[in-house]
Length: 467
Image 1: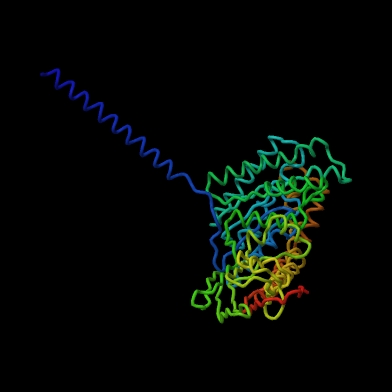
Image 2: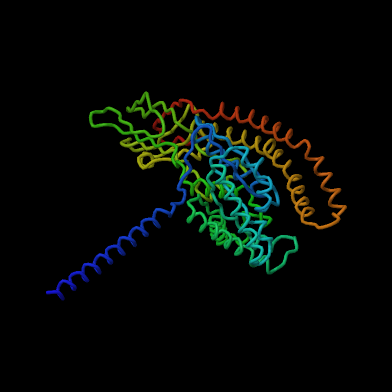
């Protein structure tokens, strides 16, 4: 009897212990799961929000940032965001730290995109010491961004085009030419891990540029998007803008209109992205008035190759129109009296896309936005960015002098004094440039407002060709 009681007590003790151990493991697993953060999947924006594009010379070019701005100007014409380009030629992560307070924090960003690493790797084969400097400076930079309440969006360094480097006239270390693109891949892979683990945004700039380049070289071995091997040209910068917006999952479609005729002869329409009125569907064709919520995303002429390579219009800016039940034949579409094109009834039934058609008034309106923003970036924005070159040089020399023990280098002291005098007017330059850029942005918000457009589709007489 006593043995039975002891055995029962022992079984109870073991069972209780297993239960508590299992419960403890489950609690630990739950706590660990709760500590994991989901990477930022999209930018949530509303009027007044600020986006800072932090980077080096590739950002200083004011191109991919310009095209991203064009997207928001046309896709969200009633939402006014604040954009600030914070790129400086030659910048490393440490340089971004040196100007952080005035060039990032002062703009109270909701999101800060970071494109740094091209200069940090120092254009040589992988060097662990160099990477550790980048590692620590980037970690500090991310911490500072979080400290001001902003969300970091980490972006991989862009492509180093080894073939373009070999085709160029500049003398380079052959081992660096061969290996530097791989170094940038390593830096970018680390950034992806940081973003995934910490719940930040992440954009792959490296992959699209490399993938498009290798595909294009199957037809043209000399193809490049980066003629100097480092700085993407305008088409390459469109690829970058596309990557940023795509990876941050912004709204992709402008509109979709589907029109048909019911069995009783009444017209019917299903429309998204605007308001359709005055619909007529008869033997003469189809007509209606369309007030869209937004405009298509278009880029200036010099950047159009990038739009073609990424299929930017179809993927990010689709204006689809489909009309069912039309008698066999060809039909001419005009918008506000301007002919946009001719299409067969079967093509119209499938759907046509108008976002990349330069004959439509919407495209022309969007191009005016793009050209105004090009003027804004080529002039006032870039002028402000140029003022930060002197500050970067100043900060670097001051850092060197502060590290010197004993008597300071006289030449550096004189150079620092000259730069300090040069920087006396920097705040004035910044404010004047921002005021002028804002005046142009006001014009953009006058031009970018959608207006009601009259669509008319008429059957074309046999033998009539499109002009």
